[in-house]
Image 1: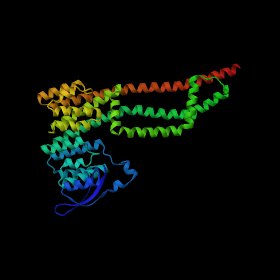
Image 2: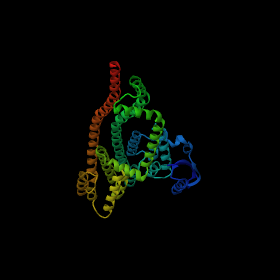
Image 3: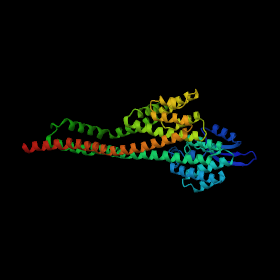
Image 4: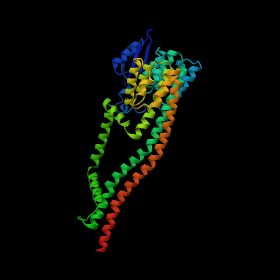
Length: 409
């Protein structure tokens, strides 16, 4: 979202300088007016004019670890009775991330100008998610902001832990796959042509070679003469695929594909259910209505197919049904979720029950990823071994046969 630098006058005529994020210049103008400010200058900030580097968003990222520390410290300071503006100023000074420091500075200015903390957070959607903002808004409305921030810190930590676990499990196969691709191109471009030359020298141009050896030489010749086109084509295909996945239709098909892949489906469902349970529990405990909680939680799950199921469930809840009923008919939500929801609805402790569900599925995710990691490593070794063995058989067998024919002749 673009950032605009502004100069505006307060009601008492004081000039106020700052930055705000908005979809357009008109939206930025409306946002300032709603705050009771009279804009006298509004233009894209210098950060927005930095061209290519700005588009890459270099340096404009806040680590989850920094967000957790900020949330916990803000909660502690509010609990201790420190005024909000003073708390934000202190946290701004302590922030090591320069971008995060500027974000906190902007939030501090907005709060000083009378804006609610949740609205100030909402102006930085790349740092504070919609779930985060809504929980803070509920905390402000209920006068329990310190408690909500503690819940948020725990939730962000859990989410970061799951992401780290998934990324860690994927790192090994990605590295091995990358090395394999580089090795494949290296062998096909530099080694196989020389070996083919040796075979031709030993047996002549009409030497009888096994089918797999001729196929490998043919592939090598194609790769050698078209390597640049292949790499450019792969790059373009990858770029277009990523762009397509970002479209609504592409995202829907991609997420549906993930839910139909045998092992991937299990991981995606467990991660999404854990995220749904913890987020929904936190929102309802904060006093957010069930319908609004479902709306926000759906967007936080990370899978549009499951989000659509929650939207359908929200519609049925709006028509008077208990949430456990539509969830029980879900194609992807495990049956235990609806059963636990039913228990929570009967006892009036949905938030407590769902926290236990979240703990269970987070532990399930950890166990599943550890199991997958232990299986992936030997599988990758077998695949690499087979690749090396195929090359060795394609090369060494024919060379040994041709050498034997020459010595016998």
